[in-house]
Image (cartoon, rainbow, N blue to C red; front, side, top):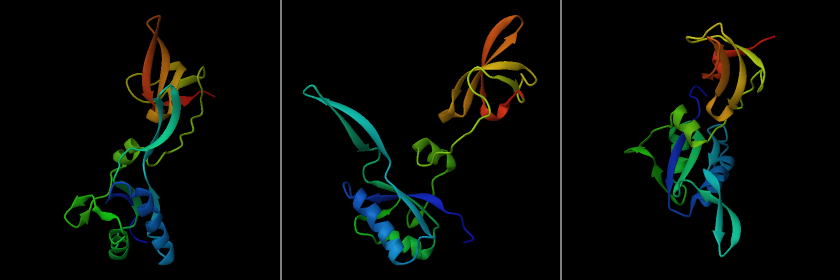
Length: 173
């Protein structure tokens, strides 16, 4: 395929999200369109509820009435998704579906990218970018979900914490 698959938001009747997701995947399989419709997700979160001193963990939909579909947009794939029972349309202008941006995808937690860093808390690292490039410090904290690392750098005889992106530091050999 010349076009890359993107994430689109499909509006559904509230309460039909699971049925719509299953139907889209089944229809894509039946019509041999798995290369066009790759994934269907319903963003959920785990919530702990307390009722009458009983604690229950519940899976709750973050966006009721919406389903995320990773697909290559063609007339056939658009038609397949649009004509599933329970789907009211794509999110976008008129009949034009608008794909989610990379920032929206990561903010919604639809796709996670595993980041592997060559250092851990307590490791010595060299800052390679920014105003402190060339300084050596000790890793104090690693925030993988934000791709940030806190490094303690000794400047002017004082320990100073500095927040940096993963690509701004490298492990010392």
